[in-house]
Image 1 (tube, rainbow, N blue to C red):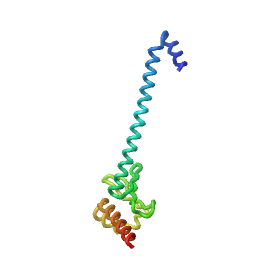
Image 2: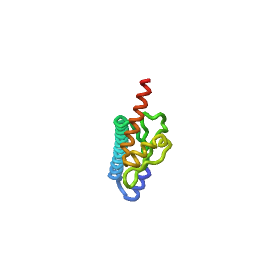
Image 3: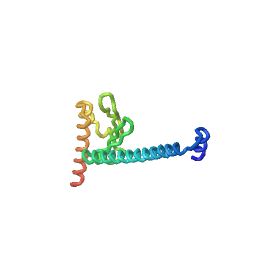
Image 4: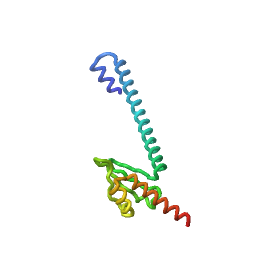
Length: 139
């Protein structure tokens, strides 16, 4: 700061008080902007977590996404690796092959391929997992 003050004095001549005040104001604006940006990031992350929690509670699926890839894991699945993978396509979402899909070939054929209904498929999977869990608990 002192070097800057000296250079200003040499180049402008005379008092640097007005320039120092302007620099201080600009520094304060930059700091305020950084604080605001941090608050917005925190609020955005909080809202994302609330949204993900609501989806989990409403539909029984944990959703993770990166770029244009969505990974859905049924909360009633046996393993953390039991996920369905979807990718954004020109006309909605496209289901990608994942190891967990091998357990659900009939449902994929009926709901996704024939009826074109990803929601129907996800609902059927959840219902089946729920029924399995309920039957296991009753025994």
